[in-house]
Length: 304
Image (tube, rainbow, N blue to C red; front, top):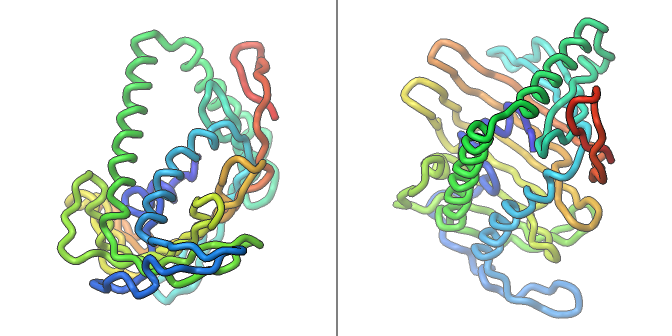
């Protein structure tokens, strides 16, 4: 899913699948592996295995998610040193599936339709993408797919570490959007040595995650930075207390897709640029495409 700059931040921070609030060095609570009443029978629940399963399920979930179009609205509030909002901007986009990839078509800024000039620029950008895919050589396609596979492998390696990087506490069962969920808190495990590239950010965050009791998919995530986290020597540094919340919803009884993402980011980029923003993403009108048609007579585009 194209979650724009926010999902990029999540990956850099180590908050891709589960990554949110708990208490450093705390062992699994007495609720770990405890029998909890869910429905007519009590079941034994291991929070670590729940998180492991949810992380793996999210990777599989992404494959189905690539078949859906949707509308995305992003809002960015810039905040000054006193915590006051200095400006608010928003963008609304239709997210299509072109050549098997999600592509955004910007349709509004600050909740107002684009001007004819801006709309033309958007179409020009989309046409450029389609021309590139249409005229792609076999060698270029192989390289692109190889790069994509490499990214997927890196993501899998990262996700595989999540369940090992934390101590988990099963807090109980809570309702979320009318469904039963396991509420789990996670704290970084003391002495844990990250193995994959992005996993080094995991100890910098604690989190709470809500996992659907039936589908074992994560439905809500609340993460908070415990301390400053850096990427590269001077490239990017996120500061303590930056917070993120993600919520998902079940669509067509087959896939869990983003519903709402909210982030409060206090960071510094390339030493000189400060980034103090509140980001909010909402998603709606999910539709699974059924066929491909021609757009402009040049390339396939999927339609719901």
